[in-house]
Length: 467
Image: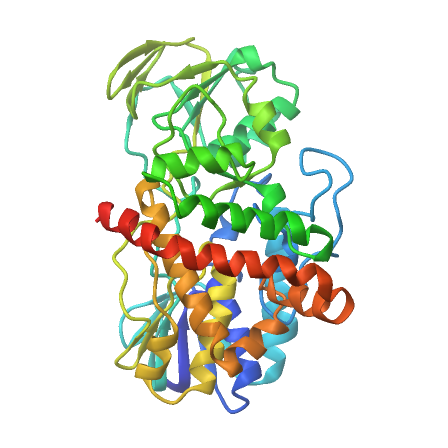
């Protein structure tokens, strides 16, 4: 069978759906086909562990035209005082509603779940039936960074018989399993998933003394208090951005910049005695960080190579552990780093990072630009992709790249008008509201502008050192 469409979007995750939503709104003639391997919309959210939650506020995540959550401020828990963070179940339901209630009813979107894209066609994973696609305009790749989660990744360490290794999603069901509860819980990995697991274990009532954390690296983390949207957080959020730029103008090294931002309350780390080498833009509250500091049994001998009953073999040594330990695999890489490429290529759009780390804003802006500008040259001139970073040395480049794209968008009336009403932009709507209701508070933006201009030369130097 052969079908025709204007746009074939590969991937029905957050990026693909945010792109489709804005494209449907901006181009009222566009016909869209969406193909995804999963049985439901939402991409990697379908595979995430049950207690996963957003790290950024729900208020600025998802598709542009459908609010997520209720713009509520949490009144309890480690996120107390900040905008709500949707649970994984809430996000999955949201993306199902996006497809069912917003995209499909337009009559211009067709959705093929359980389907694998293979060049000029896609194949149903279960039936094997293949459908060829004649694309009139563009192929849209929303899967470039190949998101990986614990439930779907391949382990890179050996596991001997008799060793219990689980993924985070099985933890809430642990009480149902045969064999009794473990006497030690060993978290493998140093990223945000491992941090989520640590918090969950502690809140479940497991003593910190019964938890071991294998951390190959330490990470810098964004303090969630400095990235809140809304007018009530304006001074704190813009103050955080000013701190980044003012310190970026004078920092001798990227490491020195992070330490200055820690002093300013913009960055956090779990162990203040260990120098972080990793930065993935993970966001955490001070309450969560404080809870994780209670886990004192931390092993820093590199990545796990093999696990045997009573023993772990690591890159830099061995470690004895209880034979009745439960190992929780949090070693999935989340996003696979890849080189950047032009977003608009011959007959193809490769969605990438433009405003780090706001992936759904990136996709919505890209769709707006696709619908409102004529040539690929014009479109690429407004969108300069930014590489996903793994180590702290890449931070200067992401600040520069995000700043450059924001500047380009601000100078284009079409794009700036779109952002002014976009729920996905943490700043533009707030600034617009203040301009109407409390213009005197916007004086802070002059300091931000001056700090940004002053920071550029040193950021360029720091970014060059990371090449």
